Image (cartoon, one colour):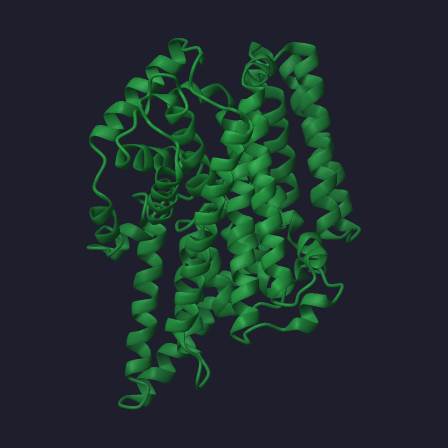
Length: 459
């Protein structure tokens, strides 16, 4: 009966959000109302029943029909979106546009900001005096540590990871299998687009026919994206309720120092993003206002890959970034140079291990430079779903010859930290898109500065 009451309450809030949509309340406002309702409702469930109670656990299972169901819908359209968008963008390149310059600028920004993010992670760990000494290991942590040690032992060399991006079977990659599937689809789509441009002069009829087919498919997929993104407020409501209701306050308090250091580093990286936006002559306040719904969803869903459709739509319609840059930055940003997961987190763990008495490691300039470089290089191909930071940490710690057990000891607060990391990952991808668009002249500055909102608010 108690579970039924909770489910009815959730459905009532869904009805409120649906009514707001029917009244054409702006998309941004609906997302923040959903966020607030989710936090309050989750807090109430936490206070009444407790995080680990059977009632909360069973209620969350029902909430997941909305929350995880929405995330699954997003992930369903990610691969079709990447394929048709990147292929279409290349086929429709105007004379003088350079795909190489676009891709090179995006990758350089993603990896460069990840290196700086790693440095912020180092400074946060040192500033808060973090170390691995005294961290307790319960049954769950011990099991997690053993599993991670096995994973680290079987981890491929970084060169093998790079080679694996080239898909032996592109159709397998399109299904989303493997940690590098997104990058593989990006590469395959770019290959299709470049090949199509190669027949533009020799076989103009075939070129025009294929171009029309791709553009038609693009229109259909973008309509799918719009339909799914209308459900964002409902997804945020369910996901935030789950996070707040299921969080263990005691575990968070036990590791509050690490949580504080992590969010201090995340905030510093976000400030860096705003500085980059300001350097290219754009107003960072406008960027924050228009990107907040995207970052809110990334925060609640913990999925960089799942945020790709909303990221692309926002860059194109609200920030004025060209379609090619928006699609490439969002797609690559989900697997390359994730500032939070692949930058801050591994660097913080490495410093914590090195700072532990008896580690035999001296934290000097040489160690920090090596750590930052290894972290930046290792940021290629990090999975764009919850847990990507774990793989990034395994790669960095293993490359430096450090033990990986610390990753398992932080399992109790992993969801809380991962929310902030994912938001910063997406912020980095959006910043890269905006900066690249401005630098290469592939951006409508007037649209960026206008008081616009997503077109789906009016549909």
